[in-house]
Amino acid sequence: MFDANNRGVLELSRRPGNDICADCSSRDPEWASYNIGIFLCARCAEMHRGMGSHISKVKHIRHDRWEESQVQRMCEIGNSVAKAKYEKRVPPCYRIPNEMDCDALLEEWICAKYQREEFYRMERQPFMAGHTEGYLMKRGKEDPRYYPRKFVLSEANDTLKYYVDEKKDPKSSIKVSEINVSFAPPKMEKKSSFQISFVNSAGLTRHLFVYHDDPQTAVNWYNAIRCTKLHRLQITYPTVSQAQLVNLLTKDFIHEGWLWKTGPRPTDAYRKRWFTLDQRKLMYHEEPLSAHPKNEVFLGHVMEGYAIRVGVPAGVRDQKYSFTLWTPERWFYFSAEAAVDRDAWIQAISSVIETPPTPQEVSMAARMVRKRGIFSSR
Ligand SMILES: [Zn+2]
Image 1 (cartoon, rainbow, N blue to C red):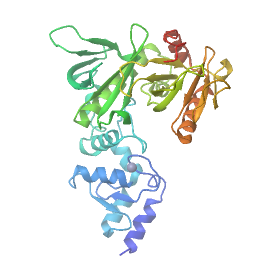
Image 2 (cartoon, protein in one colour; image 1 turned 90 degrees about the vertical axis):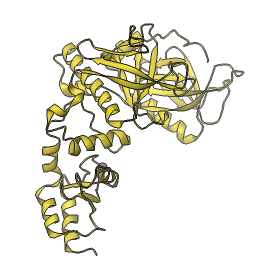
Image 3 (tube, rainbow, N blue to C red; image 1 turned 135 degrees about the vertical axis):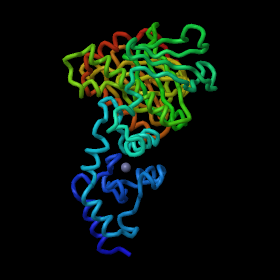
Image 4 (cartoon, rainbow, N blue to C red; image 1 turned 90 degrees about the horizontal axis):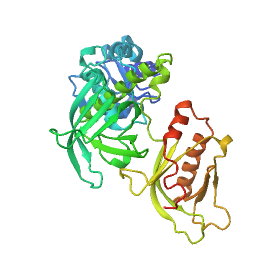
């Protein structure tokens, strides 16, 4: 069934621009949308199918039959021409997903491009409004259930507020310029969820866990927060380039997972904790969805005495797959469940401490309450 038309479309798929998926940039796409005129990976092709054939008509390059006119259309359009049209006005704050990103971000990117045509009709960009309000399901602080809470994002005030009772004052008013948002971290086990983290007035990190059943609403919130952050940063740092500022908007966690942690005495027990490496901040928590970390450690530079090594020093109780983190204040002893986990943590922490901190990171370190629990072995 592989004929001259298949060969033609296969050759087109190898041309520069067509050799990466039009939506997630993964290599060597094997599918195509023949009405839009783009080459796609299997995952994005499935998402195109989900929009319905009135939006996107999907075929496999080798395994489906191609008409000559369809090959001709692929030749006339292709990924670069389609990109110039469908991504013409992607705002700089918009998170453009790649193949590593979760389904909700990728799916919404595809729907925004081809179904809602948000990026060549600017009036269709709700996240750019400067004000967003609506209900999100928020996890209780001490209670694992989720409750509907009204959230209000205001660019003019640089605040994200949420209400338990709308007739009363907000339960919390958070400075948007100081929050980090991580979209759908796997631990939340919900497709359209995000974690908002910030340092509260007492100098402690607080995590809010929220979701919305509708992925479009959740992704709009996420991009609205990014847009607000960008506009606030542009006011604060008028001379810094937009590209540099975009890089500061939201950061996915570098690494997360369970580790065991012990104290310096051989009698100290190993306790299981959920660890999150958020930029230069290593936090550990009782549970993956704890509202506060039990402790947080700023990771400086190797030149300042930070180091990480396999094993623990003599005298410290050794558990399988252990490793040691040196900081100028104290040493931390950890143990992973498997060698591969330990090596992934060592690699993640090494990459952080081998990079000199930025001025923003140094000021974050100063704000962190470093005394709190830092000498404890909880
Ligand atoms: Zn793709």
